[in-house]
Length: 337
Image (cartoon, rainbow, N blue to C red; front, side, top):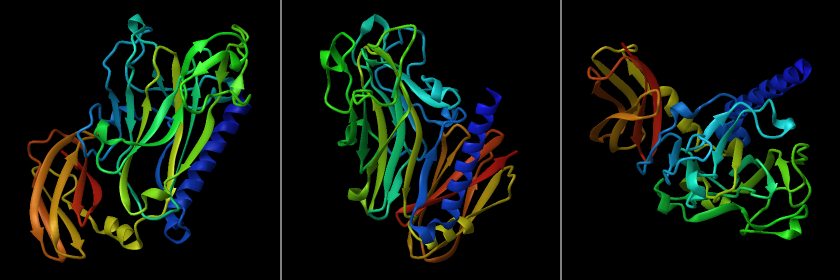
């Protein structure tokens, strides 16, 4: 057991090193990491529980507000291990579709921050597994919006996993499912449950990927929508978006955004450089990802610029300030005493 844990930790460390290398050298390699979440630790405390349309952080939104039949959280929630033995050391997110009273209408949304897609090299990959299959296998949808993160804006279907509809028995042919990929139907990424039968195979984390080439030149939001009805549980892991960073200039911009003083007491001053005249405004987010202040500076001319922000009314803690300009944003952190 110790050797397995040690091997798993070493693999995770190696992956982190590789991803870090991709970020550092990505501008030349055009294989940059645009977004990565491996769920090794619980990140949900930093997720916003409701979407506002232009959120810059992850959103974990329970749209149905129906109670879980087993007292589980109603939205996506973290677990330190997956369902199958092979995933027993791998943290992931869960979502339940088995609701009180067997009520239909489950809709749990996990939305990414906005991602700028520069060219046709962009790709989305992730892993998922159902608690059981084929009986009561959970389905879900991967959806994309090119405008905002309001639910109705996610009109493009990137991937569909089918859910159980009817049937019984040990053979997948005895069941009907909704349209889409059915986990375990091809005989792979499943584990036999010795305490059950072959109608309740355990799902192993299976990798998937889709191209984002059609969104080149656009900023998109991606949503994982758990929309299965009265099944059981689904797990999600290792969400990764790769592609090309906007340009070396964008990397330089991030390095030139400065906040002073830091730590701050009453006021902060942002220093940055504009490559052309543009409207500028800023938002401040607390450590949980909630927006606590918005400031509009208005039109500023190209060159070195500053913005003063009153933070006297903010509680002590760590904050993230995001500056919007030229159809992009740059950010930095500061501490409020």
